[in-house]
Length: 409
Image (cartoon, rainbow, N blue to C red; front, side, top):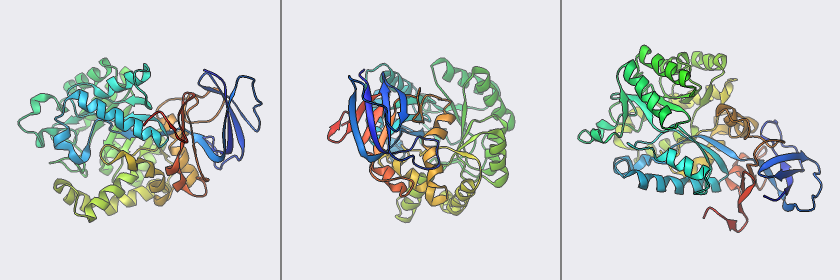
């Protein structure tokens, strides 16, 4: 791979509290080797002039569902695994056009392993797309948020759900995720809004069950992500060693303080709340979600503001798949609307997200990091909305989008 010099009109390195002004980046063999005011012009280098753009590390979304269609769940869930994987590839490629070079997929509702297959196909160069870090399935209690039998009572033998009701069965499911190559363990310890028959305000695992799940994940070396809503659910997840709390719908001040002390990450999926609120007001929210979401929406927004005021580590995550991927880029704007500063929101989608994922090779523009680089017109520190206008995407030193050139179309 030839050397590339990127001329940046403005640069955000992923960790600073302000943009650094005009800079240059030298890329060699897919890796950043220099970031400075001038990197020179190696004789064989290709020069990319982005002097009218702000350059940033590639964005990282730590909570997506490539193989889930939340607004058509009853139909889509019963499709075969290859159809879900092909749809997931399409969504991954289109999302990458918005600047997302790394995604953490938080589980498919499928008896097979489509997201792992998709991850491996991209890693091996068989398909173009963002880097994928995968929790293959969602481990749930019976009648919990991940149990689909409320929608498909006569078809549960298909293995759509990964359900357990004892520590021994929980350990078996965690070990199975590990055996097939999952990167993370995903569980759900409260109900959710888009599932039938459960309640986000209620905890669905008993303490010994949750602890068994956390202990097994830790023993196998797999980090644990927990979908959680109720304030007590957030605390239970932290007691079990969760590395990230997903959604944190109803988290209270005690739970936030516990997360800070544990050095855990909060992934509050704020744009999803705005999407669901718009559906509610338009009368289009699925009926089984209406009573729960109408009851809780003000409390969810209050919890988001409390998280924004805290010192907790907040990472960018959207829950795309439960709403259109085309709106996932709006999470930056949702974060600042809830009270995060532009700098903190930008870090949430770059360096902080990389830290959550335990990847020290992405999320920053610095020597030794992978050349995941995006660019946009304007300055996101002055107008966070310009993050939705990315028109240059590089992953691992390979340009995927630049002007009329687009490998992802």
